[in-house]
Length: 163
Ligand SMILES: CC(C)(COP(=O)(O)OP(=O)(O)OC[C@H]1O[C@@H](n2cnc3c(N)ncnc32)[C@H](O)[C@@H]1OP(=O)(O)O)[C@@H](O)C(=O)NCCC(=O)NCCS
Image (cartoon, rainbow, N blue to C red; front, top):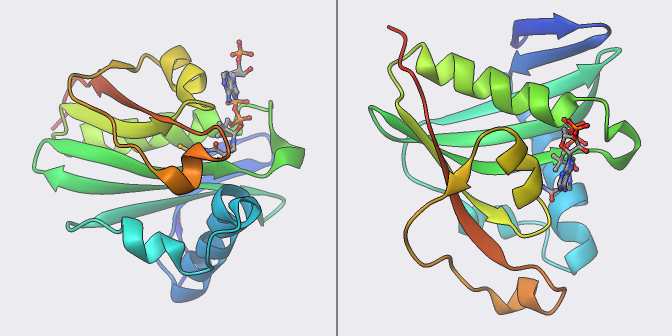
């Protein structure tokens, strides 16, 4: 079964992934970009898993996965962006923006009114450009990340629900 193609911009497509193979490819991509260089174990993502239905988006160029985003429904009106990554060779082409805007458009269509995320300090600026603002609360501290200079920020964005 193929993913649902949500949008196409030049030769880049954003797809909601639903096959086991595609989801496994995204899992590998996330590990390579987000955790491998921090010497974290291959199954580290399991420790970040949330309850609630997850949405997994892939960005493909010429049908090759170059980026992806994982979000979880936290309630009927709220999602958390859990993981977001684009391969370095594809940075700066609007793919990260495209992934986030497709997610927000998709969930707003299902009644979502708020998206939030625990962003790395290295990525918070990217999300602020997309309208995310500092949320209340204490961001988590994680020694395994801190030793690489990575800290976290709580960010949120209100959405206009579209039913
Ligand atoms: C953050 C990331 C997803 C951005 O993806 P991308 O496809 O390169 O982003 P875009 O091309 O859509 O960039 C959109 C804008 O954000 C800016 N931007 C991109 N990455 C940024 C960053 N890390 N910090 C601040 N601004 C950033 C771009 O310069 C661009 O600005 P412009 O509109 O003024 O030209 C990508 O750099 C990435 O995967 N980084 C490593 C993984 C990571 O840290 N993930 C987040 C874990 S919480």
